[in-house]
Length: 414
Image (tube, one colour):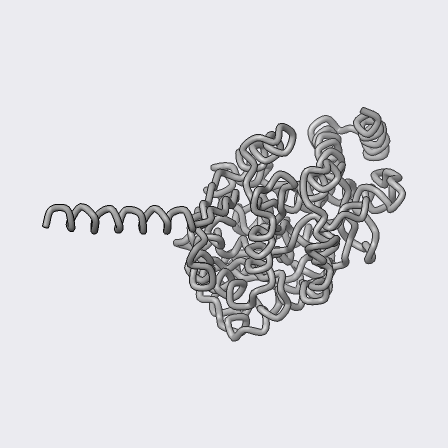
């Protein structure tokens, strides 16, 4: 009897060991809040692949991307799949550390017409490498406090008509309520440098790598933002600071221009008690721009590339998965077909019953497919530093932009 029991236990242990051996572990590295999309998708993926264990490693935005930079440089601690924010796609692509998904065996461009066109451009480096699959997008919007605007007698049309009208509205708001219209004048600069672009054009560089920061587009951006500072409509507070969040909670800051995802942040953790007071509108002057966007890439050092590609396709091209992330996390889908879901037409209680997702979808369809460059983050950093000198030190705009060009040229030569 004891021998029989021992044999049965041995058989069970052998069976369990065999099952464990059959499990394939797929490591996915992501950042907050993109990791929540992966978490929501894992049960759906397990239904199709019960033999696959998804190991999700999630860090804060900065820590994650720094870890991925190190992993790609050293070849150590590489995941099978990595989530990437838009600002890092071209850098990783031209660094040679991720798979070019346009080539066999991936042939990812077969899906390009399924995504909003600008998200495909965002995933493609100037070198022609299609480095990552789009997951979610951030159609730009102006979020504003309707209760404060009503108190000041300001209409949405006044806010969105033009930049001069926007600035004038800010002066009226400050005079009648004491609130600032925007956290920082840099928001205006960041929008205008993205305005008037056509498909195939870049923000900081043209297709041949020529630096564009002395163009009229940048001059206009700096001059307009400078006028906003002179008018006293910005609180001189940087995004994501404690003061920024408190400004929205207390109503001392009345609007912000960001991606559609800001509505979810306002509702869930920044200012939940302001429910019903916010509205979403178009960017002043009719600008259609993208704020952020998330992607999935496959490192060349991935040990499970075939499975990694299967998972990446699942996260980006599966309508059910994209809709689940949309409904649960308000992550606006990069997959056009997912935006035909009835969720788009539902009123948003936090935005006073507004059907804002319809507007965000319309904006997404109009955003130009601008080119990206691996040096875009460098150029953005240099331009931001020179803009601060214009605001804080009174530096001449054209001199600041000329100096920005020289600084970028030095960085390019390194």
